[in-house]
Length: 145
Image 1 (cartoon, helix red, strand yellow):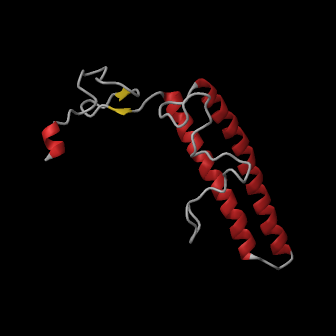
Image 2 (cartoon, rainbow, N blue to C red):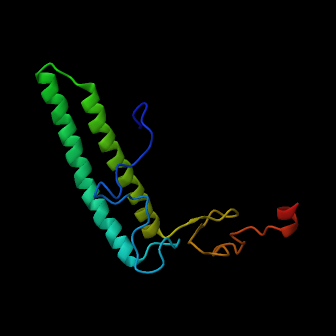
């Protein structure tokens, strides 16, 4: 759930001291090269996930405590709550993205065959179950027409 009036953005970046989950993990090789994460990157993502889980839990606890304290003093400051909730939302969305990437990496499935529905891995050319091509051939005539 996104807070009203809140654009999806990450507070993580070079100035915040927290790497963004959407930015590719740093590599020693070619920078920005697409492809599945390496074993070291998976370990880094798992560490980041564990750190974010603890951070999100702490932020939820703190937000609840903040609401309680404001309520007992009969002084609710909505702008403070919205700001804290937005930070929590950013951390939670980063955690969700990291978990999605790790789930894909651990399941090693990239999709399902269009003919029989069998799962296939990244880079598969033909279905292991029915033998149908995974990728469709596109004629060059249709591209340049």
